[in-house]
Length: 629
Image 1 (cartoon, rainbow, N blue to C red):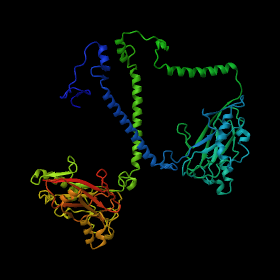
Image 2 (cartoon, one colour):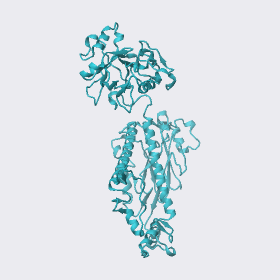
Image 3 (cartoon, rainbow, N blue to C red):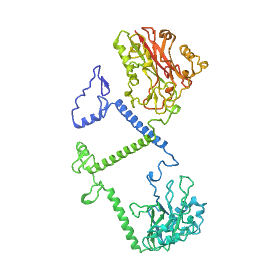
Image 4 (cartoon, rainbow, N blue to C red):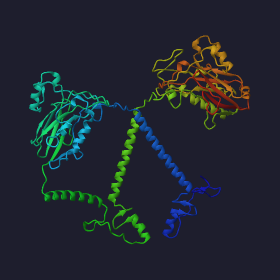
């Protein structure tokens, strides 16, 4: 960035001070602000800068869209398409089913025109579509309120009632005639009392009445829903239905219908209705006089036209209250046009809008972004609700990191990468590496640095710990590779601390049979395995370090492993228990060749640890270079 002004080279010195603003007429300055031929910039940026800005925003919104898609994907993965997570009272819809009537016209009311024989055809078609799945159902085998009589339309129309579906909802019946509520209709109570068996009384009862007391009602399919089956989200489920016939409908009226059960709550409020359906029936008995029709239609037409015009003329010029869209804009000089485009003192508009309009637009965008934030938060909460802080959703081969553990080493100074280079006589250089190892070993020596203070750490010995406890690892086992000995760096016998990276629920498959050891295992490791006296001592993930090339092998010299060249099985598997510390192996270089870079590869040995020679992938191993002066 130095040496450039707005993306253009200005020499060897960084010139961060901008040139003075251009002078001259306003038009010239505006033109130069749009395009500056000297700097070849458009709106203050060179094409390269615009490319960077556009790329940034493209990446930004792509990441935003990707993040949203991931959140939605995580949320959808946690959902069961066949069954909701929350049911009944735990769900948003609750455990009180609504009541629905069919037909259900778009206008909200049934209009029956006696002068038009086809006025009810749309209701008949809607009922035919509604009953299409019921053709083979026994409850459909009735003589009245069926397609054969056009469901009674238009003279004696039928209404069909059903309960809205709620998964796992079961009705509590009014099956005891002696304990019916006080508001129970008398004729229905008498009907229930006349029934002889509990099975006949175990029904969801229907009760309809005319709010204007003009229409007589009857129930050709019976007073109750047929045998009720609990809805379990099955695709073949059919709602039980009861039919209500209106006899001799001559005037407009309102029919209200309830379905009665102990756990169907009735609220007669029109604002928050529940437990009932309300059907408005508008009957046109004949053809009114032409003048009356014209007057009614004209008034309705004018009302709608006036509403549309009032909406369309919200921003129009209104001299004396009359909208005028044909006015010619006043002729002004160019500069005045620009000024008035920004602020118009005559109309009180800023950038073409009044403060009221800007307030409305600002409120719309504020609400929109608040909704976006809320929606994003809900998506994130839905995603996080599916996650366990301790147990990962994807494990081992199904996870991103896979089922092949990597390795790590200390000291590791990130500014130097994998290189360890120091002079044995330079205490400052030695201190950097010793401090790095001490920092890494701090939780091993000071348990208070752990999340739970190491309260659940125990000395396991040869037995795996219980579920909520972990094995402790003492740095006293590292022998000469201790802080008191400066980890051997001052003696030119440096120590390397080797660890196996953690993978949740990974269990090693050990090389515990001396007769089945891999042929490329280093001799010092095979000798150690053969020297063990019990199978338990061989159940370890073995660790070895070697020079990468023949020259490195010669320069590396002999090695010593503390406490032994392996990681004990009591530390596996890792299950994210608080206080867990990885087991360590300290590798001491006893006689490294001085003043020469030695390339070292340390690897782990187990049947289910893959190893590659490639320095790029470094599966199952870690690479470092060391030079001691």
